[in-house]
Length: 163
Image 1 (cartoon, rainbow, N blue to C red):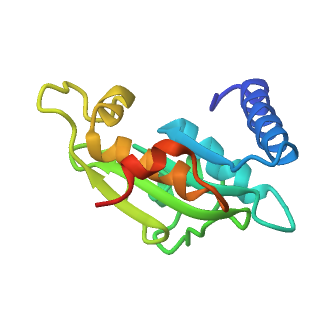
Image 2 (cartoon, rainbow, N blue to C red):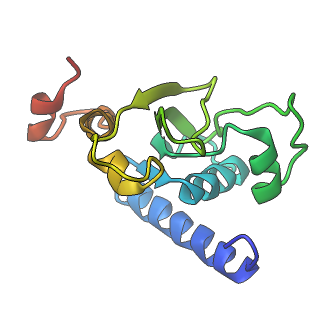
């Protein structure tokens, strides 16, 4: 991805197609992205110029987007300590999930920054499965989906409502 512009372009085109398809079908758009996928989503959404927010919720897990130096290396920009990070214009809400033991997961000063706890038997704190095995991560992803509905929420949303 980083060294192959063709793979990067293909990834961005796939994300764009799915966003545009959901938008055309009138469905809420929730993007859940892990690690480098979160960097790709952030970069693509930051460059997109929708007149209205297209993405209801962006949920990042184990993302390094909050660190200026890796962000600069991977997607460009100044990379200095004062390099500001902002919520992409086309995103209504951003939830950043990070395992407190994951050194690659950067805190965010924008959006909602949530520290999760992986199961005690998780060997790699950055592993996607560890995030998905965390009940707090799963609850955040489900809540993001349910909150994205402007009207009537799906039936199961009452069962995962925030406590």
